[in-house]
Image 1 (cartoon, rainbow, N blue to C red):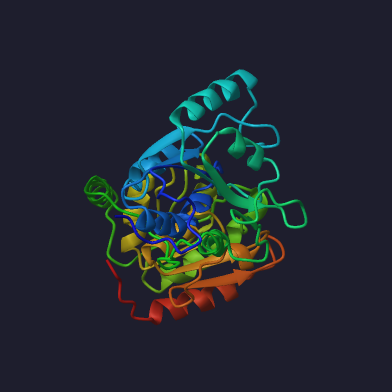
Image 2 (cartoon, helix red, strand yellow; image 1 turned 90 degrees about the horizontal axis):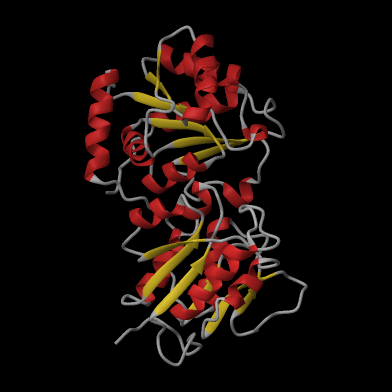
Length: 345
């Protein structure tokens, strides 16, 4: 018998087929709702749970198969900018979803101003999620006013609590596979990685969130002068950033931009002494791995996106890409490097 729900249970019988809608493009967008996924899975250990997300989320579902059973590609919907709208594709998807006969749909994409309509059209026995504060509530027992002032992790945990689903902590997580470790070992041998390397990740999905290359170079030079090996990381499209920083440095650096998969990047971060990065997906990956980090906020909201654990993670906040100084970042970095951190596997 399944347990975990309070008296305000979602259904008279525990739902067996559950769909969760979160069709956002960022790694951080999905990592930040893992604690809510963990709560759902612990409450419904035998349910078949489907994530309706963007194409890249298929690999996320494979990585988190202990929480998720299936991925369905979000077909698009009016008012959702992440996917080009194709009415034929939407109609076909909805017909398939209605035949699936979900017991429960959880709308966890956002405040629901556009996505609640899509969620209702899936035809589940029950639909729950968020609705925009100040607008009519679809169902007071199933919909929570979107908690705009909460941290991204806790927005979803507030919904779990509201629905009577017991919380299972607010820690992020990211499983590393043996194949990731094997690729990491090969990478380390190819590039002569030492045990005292530091990762510097200058990229971000939005240019306004990128700290200045010359500032990253100053920080990298200073840490290299202290004896640390500097590793520059990023996607293939961010190679121009890492190359620009390497050219500005007086010390050699290992440029791994475009040379890591997500899993290999996780293994690399798990073994690094420190990560220095912008507010971007890799900062949430470091939080999930309990890897020490300094996160620079140039044009984003630290109240919503900063790491929760300030023992391992420090933030430096500027009002623009230039306003946070190398001195501020170095102070936090050196303080973290002086600490003895016990890693939890």
